[in-house]
Image 1 (cartoon, rainbow, N blue to C red):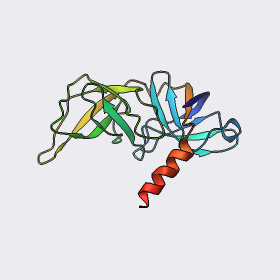
Image 2 (spheres, rainbow, N blue to C red):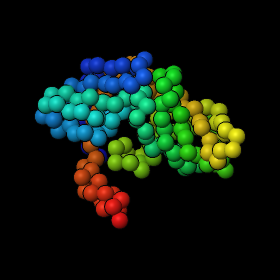
Image 3 (cartoon, rainbow, N blue to C red):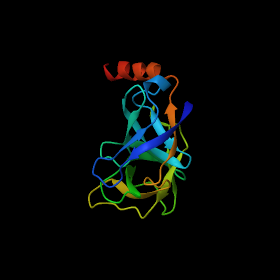
Length: 173
């Protein structure tokens, strides 16, 4: 991974579909599907790039899904925003046999091509298990305050194209 500094010049947190605008674009080497992080957490994924700017799909967008992992057990699932509180997301797909404790750290899993493993995302709340379900839904309080975002880093996976091509080969078999 390589990191490039940028500034947030536009941000929304209270809508249903939230976006950030950063002051780096194609001229700076920013590409679609790059991750964007703050010094204390992850922010989103680059979706559109112009020569000088990039639109970042915020974590606070229902289409943004991040592979996240529980620190203690190592189980991983999908972190999603359900459109409510901008301080909380939901970790889904953690099997009901996993031991999940309130106050446990949630980190990037490293199982995607977007974010490196081990970036702290937030802390778990009380897990819930719907009747008949085999998977927990776990509230996660975000470490980074999404409304107070200025200095960020664009994360580029150096071997993104090569890894993506391999994934596509397998997907088509």
